[in-house]
Amino acid sequence: MSFSIGIVGLPNVGKSTLFNALTRSKQANAANYPFCTIDPNVGVVEVPDERLEKLSAVSKSIKTIPTVIEFVDIAGLVKGASEGEGLGNKFLSHIREVDAIAQVARAFSDSNVIHVNNRVDPKEDAEIINLELALADLQTVKKRLDNAKKSAKGAVAKDLQKQVSLLERVNTHLQKGGQARELDYDDEEIIVMKELCLLTMKPMMYVVNVDETDDGHASSAGKLRAIDGGQQTAVEQIEISAKLEAELADLSPTEAKEYLRQLGIEQTGLDKLIVASYKLLNLITFLTSGEPETRAWTIKKGVKAPQAAGVIHTDFIKGFIKADVINWQDFIACGGWAGARESGKLRTEGKEYEMKDGDLCFFHIN
Image (cartoon, rainbow, N blue to C red; front, top):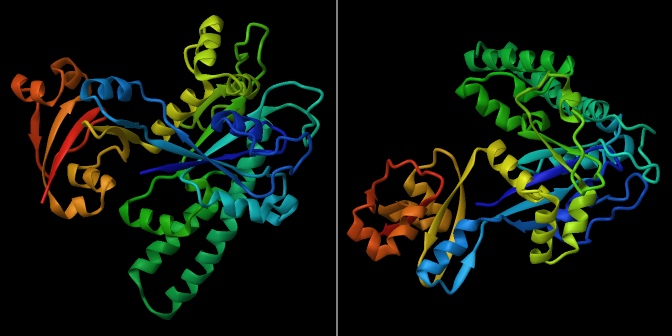
């Protein structure tokens, strides 16, 4: 299971620079003018996972395969995007296709990089983007609400009346500049909301693009708190210096690691973004390991063993018999599958087993 994160924001806030750094490529145009990106750039990035090499060494695996994350660099939005300003409708359609949104807000100061509104204010950046997403959703909800009201007039339909009530509640919230994800929904309402494919229902995080200080660290001046004024405290927020990430991208993995060590930085921007993305999308990783390969697989938290096996191959869901499961650290301590069985730490789990992050599995399939 792969998932995609759409990188959005105003023009010239560092989206393409960040995308190029994260994907270690130059495929996104990072020129100093608005709308230098028109069509979205897509980059597939391997998710760093120190567990894989350790497992591979124990199993003497021929191949080691990490799971991946897909980043989509979407062109800059501007005020009025929901009405078509700056090719806004086209850009908004690209956002509908991703699993989650990483909204980049500019907090770095560089007189050589033009801000579309001639100022640096991450809070205002975020407010503009959030408002445009809400206005775009408002058009969708109003259209659906009008149709639901017309249909409800023709016959007394309880489900339609409930749908009208839901849409009116969402419509009111969006009119106030709110985001659809901020409301609570029951199971039936969630089905309707999924059908609408609203932009503001997508999980979202803020990525604040900050200055790089003299020692190479990303500066921190309370700019994260400044974004939403405490209105959306549940939204994940991280700081990244796109400039520093770009410097790291030009180095070899060994050189980059040494550079970070000298700066006293423990996590790269990519690592921070991936951790935040997993939290945002409620994802975990399970692992498989043997002589042919050691591999990481991404699933939603709460997924049961047969569905996890189905990520490897869809036929495995129907043919699932049982799973041999052990924590990856116990597997290493036991020296492999044989030692795991002898130690008694290898468990046999059935169809109702809920997968845990770090589970190492061998699936028995009919």
